[in-house]
Length: 246
Ligand code: FPP
Image (cartoon, rainbow, N blue to C red; front, side, top):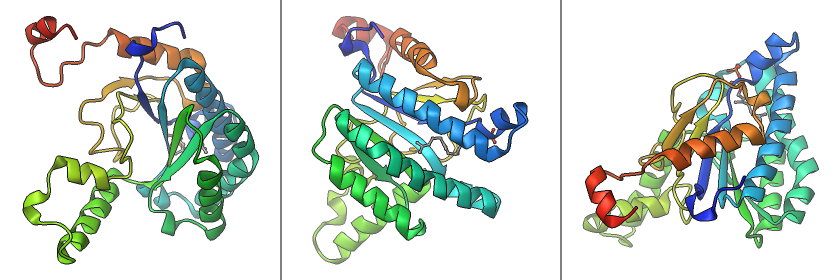
């Protein structure tokens, strides 16, 4: 990717959709689609780090995905454990810091442990932060933040009048990271599907038809080109931006 770094999105978030349809189209079981999806994720993580993207957030399992058939949920949980086992060394060697967001107490204990180990192992890395959303929902995220703030108010640590956007942001799962500049959704669906509801306020959104197992560095580059071509106005008029020189 030959874009000057200042024009690149700092934070790219991806809704990886289409594994199941890719599998059906190839006469395979859904599980094979998820395995192919992991290969895409690996290639995209490498390409994003190579391009100088600072944060990449991948939506791996939503709050709503618990309603899928038990067999599929179980095989996804096993796949996440296996992927962590297999990939953490390479991520660590590549200077990537891993961070998980979501209701982790809902996940199998072995997966929770692997996640905590991976976070601890990679905590000192700074080349790129890879955030993986598992058992995550945007509404869950707002609720967990509000619940923690309410506890602080009850304990007298915070006054209701002190609660503002900055305080809420500090309690959201992505606290401390820049909000996503670019959201990509693969698989031809045009929805946000309860992803980062608070954080996506000013994100540019790139929808593409490509099914996730066929999404790779080239498609990432195309999405970044779309981002670079957008004029981000943050509520201002185009004329104001010309004066500011944004
Ligand atoms: C979306 O396709 C896939 C998921 C929600 C499952 C999880 C994603 C992966 C296994 C890929 C990368 C994994 C990691 C660990 C970062 P879908 O099943 O919704 O597809 P469909 O809409 O075609 O049925």
